[in-house]
Amino acid sequence: MSKLNFDQLPVYEPRHFVPPEVDLTNSQTVVDLYQGLIHRDVKSAKELEQWILDRSEMEASVDQAGDAIYIRMTCQTDNQEFANEYKKFIETVVPAIQPLNDQLNKKYLELRKQFPVTDHRYEVYDREIRSEIELFREENVPLMTQVQLLSQEYQTICGAMTVEFQGKNRTLPEMGKFLQEPDRVLRESAWRATAERRIQERDRLDEIFDKMLQLRHKIAQQAGCRNYMEYQFRAYQRFDYTPQDCKQYHQAIEKHVTPVWKKILERRRAQMKLEKLKPWDMQVDPLGRAPLKPFEKVEQLISGVEEIFKKIHPSFGTEFREMSDLGLLDLESRPGKAPGGYQNTLDEARKPFIFMNAVGVDDDVRTLLHEGGHAFHALACAGQPIHHYRHAPMEFCEVASMSMELLGDPHLNVFYSEEDFKRSTENHLESIIYILGWVATIDAFQHWIYEHPSHSREEREKIWFEIYDRFGGKFLDWDGLQEFKKSLWHRQLHIFEVPFYYIEYGIAQLGALQVWLKSRQDLHQAVENYRRGLAMGRSRPLPELFTAAGINFDFSEKTIAPLVKEVEKELAL
Image (tube, rainbow, N blue to C red; front, side, top):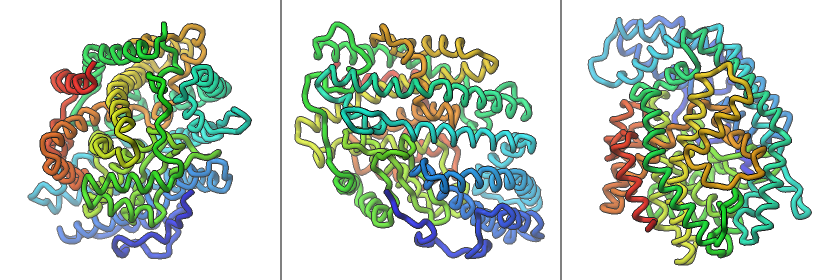
């Protein structure tokens, strides 16, 4: 586990507005800082620019204080002190500053009228601040706090899930290793043990989600939106696409991707000489070879991935080594640790932190490549002076991470023999076909949920079955396993914690596939384009970020069909 003291991180640049020793977890202290900016008299364009920089410094400092608390809580969900710190921050600091942020936004737009800037520097900033003002309602602040606390409860429940298996108490990520074992009886036993453990929490998780659903619908209505889907599209500032575009993505995936997924599964079934594929047959090598084991210890994962990053571009290797030296990695799985993986930018230091649950499987390598892509994105745009511009739209953030997975594929011989290297890259391309369909599944499910906010649990289960089967779930044999199938969506933390944040993975995967194809023609140019796009942060509209990276912002059938054909050809289906 990382033993980092976040306060000891190198300073990116000295504070000018926020006092150096101030406690940014104290709500009154933070409120006083906000009030200072709200009441400052700004008399010129130069003073306005300093006001913007001071606001950026303050937001970055407060964000880092909150992020440090969140990181500690997810690293040890069973630590009551960390849980209390996070709860206090969510209940005191966050709701205190939300209405003040609205006041700052309104003051900013008034000042921009007085002191206009003729270039395009603030074009994106202006557009997004106007959107925030239109959506903000002070009466929604306590409701949002309740949702965040429910998210923490979800994290705690999931982090506490362990299984007694083969004489040892194991985390759910650890149990995933057994699904790669050639012994089918062992795989089934491990799968059932994990699924039964999840079922024990089904009612609690359904109850949490039902509460979230009610709160979110009320938030949307109070903001003048028809439903939470409309609200969240505006909250995510999706200026460049609509819910209808997402539904067209679903249709294109069903038409072009689902048939390829069926071919992949049929080949797997034939290779395994099975009559039908069961859920526990999906991660094992279909030819009965032992599971891929890229490393034994986390240190080996770190050194191997560092070497891959160096091969893609020397600066990536250097930056990753610095992260490791600073303690900005917490990679191993252990009891009490929250599930999943993430990269979190510590905004004042402008340094990335990577969290994951490594257990020694092939996916761990790709997860670290993925989160490393996010980290390099954070470092590439660290020089953007406006805090807001140091966080790109998620659709492009995921291009950064998914492209890094594909750029890393040719160098996996760092971990593997030639035969295992080919297995790993083939697995990755198959997983891309899977993820494009899974994105459609999760996104379509969420569209239905929030378009029908008064639905019952029974109705939700029914529509989940329909949507899951629509995008390929029907190609597995779930006979006798319906109880497990009905709550598969509980595993997807995005549905609980960041609703509607999932289509980004589909959009970005298509962008990453474009980077991949270009890298096969000219690796140097593809990587330079990629780095140029990353360095822009959020400073330009989403389509321009894609263009800077040498790719097209499009997730329609026109883009999906030829890219999927390329993957299908590479897989020799």
